[in-house]
Length: 178
Image (cartoon, rainbow, N blue to C red; front, side):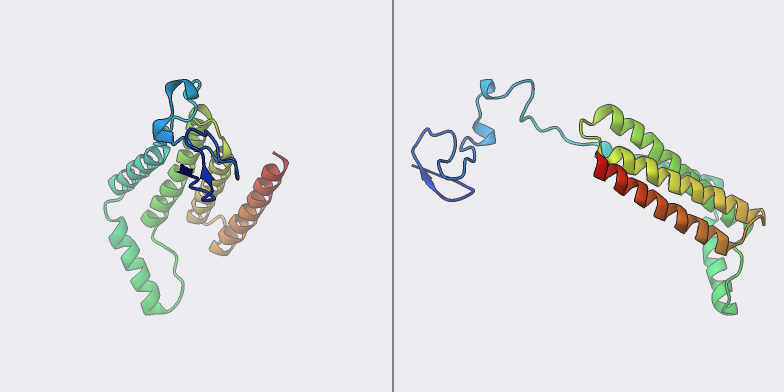
């Protein structure tokens, strides 16, 4: 006798599916070659997460290559704000580095959207990658404007918050419809 791993029902030896719940009693490891069609049931590993991580490591390398003092610049800026107990404008080098970082992250999201569109059968993450890429590139552009004294940091936060809210609404509507 064979027992179903889902419901525990006892089934006659040789039965292909449980008489109680319908779960297949043929284990994935013991399926015959003729039971699968065109690779159905064959699990492939998803390496796109590693591709994304590799891109992130490259971006970090570019950031440190562009500004080797980014960590000390950031630490000095934080120490200055703590000692003055007031928000102070970040140094120009730190703003340039942040603009580059968020811009490259946004572009990497667009790249990953293209890769996912080409290689994944389920394209759920493509929309997420595109919309988060838009948010990141917008934030990089707003930081650039802030660096040039075109807008204040309060405007940067307000515009980015509004944009993220709109992108979340757009994502929800598109996911609901499709």
